Length: 424
Image 1 (tube, helix red, strand yellow):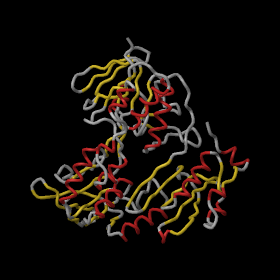
Image 2 (image 1 turned 60 degrees about the vertical axis):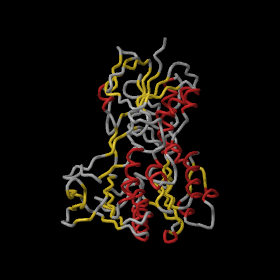
Image 3 (image 1 turned 45 degrees about the horizontal axis):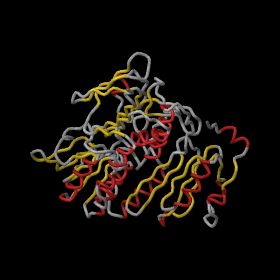
Image 4 (image 1 turned 90 degrees about the vertical axis):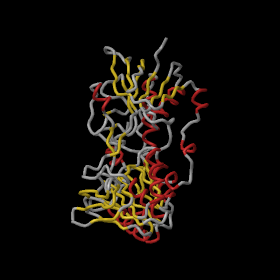
C-alpha cells in the first residue's frame, strides 16, 4: 500500500498543495501535518479584522473538516515534525513527530512557513510582550489589548502598522517604534512611507523613527516601559513586536537542502533535491520577471501559486509560470494594494492626490513598468496588474493624467523593452 504524500506545515501553502494534488488526479493518501492545534486557517486577518473582533475563528478556516474528509485529505494537528529522512536516492522516507509518531511517505513537501523574529533585548520575555503570527497570538493580543491603555508597537512593517491601526481604533494611546528612517521600507518607496507616516499621525498614532529598542522594563513580571537608544522611555501596558519573520529551515537542513535566506526552490517549487518540493513563506525563489536570483515573498498569493506548482511537480506535470506578485494591507480606512516588485526601479511617478488619501505610485526601470502601490485606488492597481500580467506597459508620461483610466493607457512593450524582459 502506498504511504502517500506527506505535507509538513498546515499552512495556506500546505492546504493549497493538498487540494491541487487531488485536482491533478493524485489518488494516494495525502497527510497534512501542523504543529498548531487547528486545521489550516487564514493568517492575514489576524492583524486586521480578527484582531479587531469583527470575525470569529471559524470564519478563518480555509476548508471545513467534512470537505477535507470527502477529498480523503488527512489533517494531523498539534504535531511538530522535528526529524525527517529520505530513504536512499528516491523520494520516499520517514518523519518523526515530537510526540513520537512515525509518518512514512512516498512524496514529501515542506510548507513549514516562518517564525516571528524575536526582539533580543533585556526584558523581552516580560508579560505583556506579544508577537502576532498565530491564531493563539491574536487571541491573546485581543484580550491584553482590551485591558491596556498605552500600547507600543515595535516595527513599522505591514504587521506593526496594521496592529497599531487596530489599537488606535479601539481608543488606545499608541506609539510605533521603527529602527530605520521610514515605514515599510522593504516594500514601498519613500513617498508612500511618508504618506503613511502622516496618515497614522492624523489618526492619533505617534511614530518614532530611527529609534532602537534597547530594553523592556517593568514591575515584577509585567512590562511597563520601553527603553530607547536615545535614553527616552515610553510607557507601555502592552508591547506588540512586529520586526519580521525567519523562514523555518530546520528540516531542510536535515535533508541537506540548499538554504539561502530560506529554502531555495526553482520555478517548479523543486528544492536542491528535486524529489522534495517546498512552498510558501519558508522559501526563496527566482524573480518573476527574470527567472533568476533569489526572492522571498510573504503573501497569500505567492503561497497559493507556489503550492500549485509544487503539486504539479509531484504529480509529474509542469507548472512553470511565475505570476505577478501582489500584496495588500488594510490600515484604518486605507487599503494599500501592491502589484509587482519595486526593487531596482530608477524612477517613479505619482498619480492622484496623496492629500486626498487616494493615489498610486508607478515604478519604472529604463521606462519599463515594474510595479504599482495604490492607496484607495483599486482601479489603478488592477490596471497595472493586468499590464504586468500580459507583458504590457503604461507610459510614465501618460500615467499622471487622472482624467484617463489607466486601463485605457495599457500599451504593448517596445521591442527593446520586450527583449530586456525575460519570462519563462
